[in-house]
Image (cartoon, rainbow, N blue to C red; front, side, top):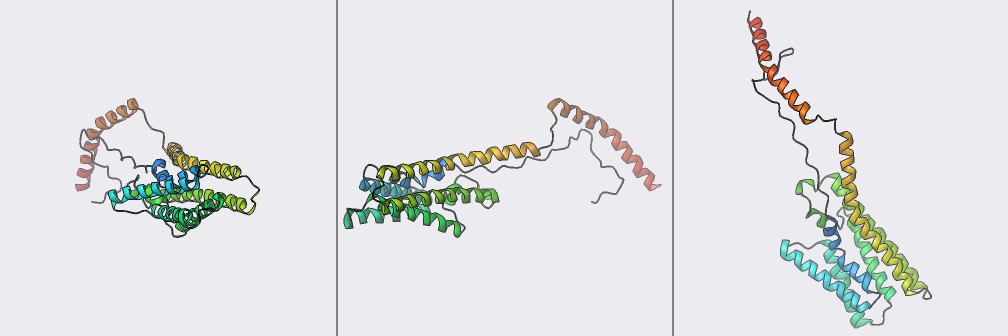
Length: 254
């Protein structure tokens, strides 16, 4: 029923107005869950300094284990898992049985370039490679929010940039054989560490930034004592307000 202009709102004695519930905040995706998809590549990048065969087969085994675990749990194969299986599986077979003497720089270039293409294509298709991992950590109601989507685009873009730098370093090392292998590996490991730190720290940065913005925009609250006094005043004023309402309705009928 529409309230007449000038009419007071009736409140029963003892009524205390309910405050609006606080809005739910979107939980940030876990960086550990996102980094899980990059574990095969991380193992490959670290172990190439020891042995290219060990690095490839270890990365393939890790990709296979992660894919099987996730498929058995949710009947789902993620794009990053399938890509890791394909890249390291084919490279392992090629290096192990077709071209055993392939240079380490060339194998790294193929792997780095493949992952760069995967990350770039996933963003062009509007399905960043980290999105499927992040969705497991966040309620479905937040999946289409701009903040959640932007977070995954930025993390995927960070890894795409890391893959591009590593592929470029490997290409330079392949063209100039006089460059020491340790320099190529050192640059690639440094870029890899930066990508891992960015993935681990960026969700925490977003959470802290959102908390600062919420605190700035939140109106000054009242303390418990002031709130209790205001509620008591409201309860005491309610019977008098009821009498005024009755008097107003009586005058209206006359």
